[in-house]
Image 1: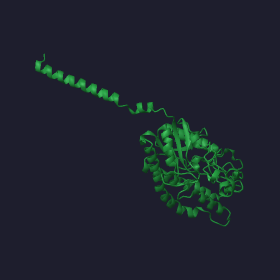
Image 2: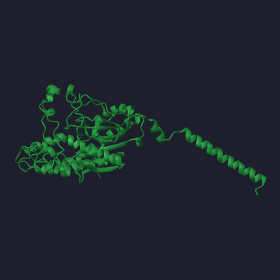
Image 3: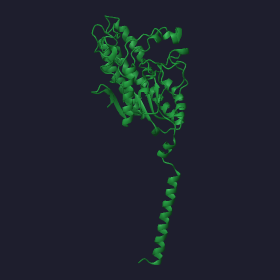
Image 4: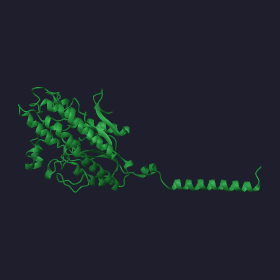
Length: 352
């Protein structure tokens, strides 16, 4: 049996342990866990997209009122945009704008098509909703100048004796991508800052950077692809699909790695469904051929005359956005940090 002194010592230790457990238990009850905080946040969840025409929904039709040329706003945010075809949150919100560059997404004091910083507008959205996913697609309108490059290559098609645009691009393209990367990194940092200003930690939401799908393929009607709406030399189209777009994707993958965000590769997303891949039948395609909208002047007035009448060309159509949104949902649901959207045996895009 224990002596009196040993019993007193043991009693003190037992009392101390019990008191400590009570205090710790009390503190544990007093400080709510992260899951408890989430449970008390009754705001609807949201996924938000930021970026340029490829994610605004350019080419998918059904544009939001006020973004179809009215008062100079040609953002062309579509009701069919990929963000609205996702199934990961209660609300889907599109802040992207056709023609935007990295500065327009950042917190910089810029104005594009009458609209200011997308990141600044994200702050308000993130306070109103519990944003669970931010998806960004940006870079094409920075140094790569994707639209102007497409026009240059079209001009080469009209010269039957020319060598095409691929020779020059083979040298210039890597340099353009290198110059673009830090601008995209700045935009990503600013989007993170916007979320922080709205009260979020980086672990509170998914941040996904995507690359771009190739709009063209060399697998077109050898003689009629120009009149069918794809006036490109076949060798130039092949260079774009097999070299330029994959290099673009890898440059953005590097950005995602350096900035610590998730990456979803779209470079093969419309493979075998690019513009003019259906030859005379465009119903199977997920990318637009040259598309001229003569009615753009109805909402945009005289400002529509020129590039705005054709700005829907070589962008994913509504079918393409539906598939891209499907892949984004699958990717976010997987919890993976990196994947590529490719067509499966069922004909749908999957994140693999």
